[in-house]
Amino acid sequence: MKFLCFLFFLTVLLSCGEFEDKVLNQPPVITSVQAPSFVSANDTIFVRAHDSEGDSISIDADVLTAGGTAVNDAFTKSFTDDGQNGDVAAGDSIFTAVVNRPVLLAQSTSSFEFILTPSEQDGNAGDPVTVTVLQNPSSGHPPVIGNLQAPDTLQLDADTVTFLVTVDVSDPEGLSDIRTVYFLSTGGSVIDLFDDGNAGNGDNTANDGTYSRILILPPTTTPGEYHFTMRAVDFTNLVSNLIDFTLVVLPAAGLDASSSTTPGEIEGRSR
Image 1 (cartoon, helix red, strand yellow):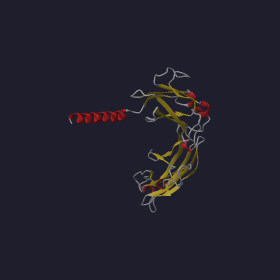
Image 2 (spheres, rainbow, N blue to C red):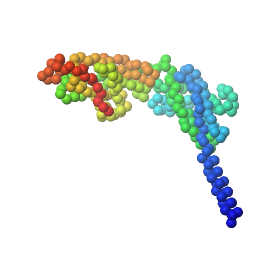
Image 3 (tube, helix red, strand yellow):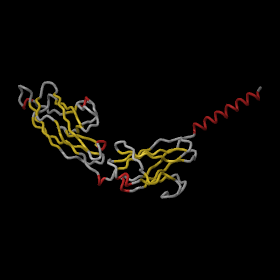
Image 4 (cartoon, rainbow, N blue to C red):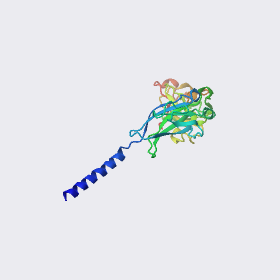
């Protein structure tokens, strides 16, 4: 009886050991990536990867434009660690790939997302690492803004006055290249406009190139002329043309301009 119990106990231990081995089989990880900052700077990407159990590793790569479109034929050489075709040494855990610069330079985008995923032969994949490579900055195009819609005159009231500002924005690299559209408020704060389809911002349709913002004038706003400059900036920090506009704020009915002694602030309504 004792012998049977011992065999049962040993079987349980061995079973647990096998279970623990499976749990401890960790997926591979990418420890470092060396990539060019922009497409025309260099054509080689180096990825160092590690697997705790020493299993054979491969590196898969997906390349997307800033707008999320997949780029086919993005590499002339896929990631290898075989010491050939540009790879320095076989088996050193540094995988080397060569990007297809003519294909990337032909894309209309501000940047590329290289999504790198390490995998074992059995399909056990590690966490992907995303690296951003800019399109050639010298061939970038700034955004363009136009058709600014904003009131030129408003009258204060005992209650807060709201008004809508919209502007149309385009970019040769596509709307996904637009990082921000804004102007400075009277107090120097950045007032962002949105193209998110959020009615709270006054925007009707998301991603249609029309940026909007509902703004407010507190009753304490000082009457007078307020001057603003609208601009858009893309992901390579290229700035659009500038549009200046002026808002004349009139005192509330029955009050003169000197009756408001506390400077107010033109603000964006809470989103």
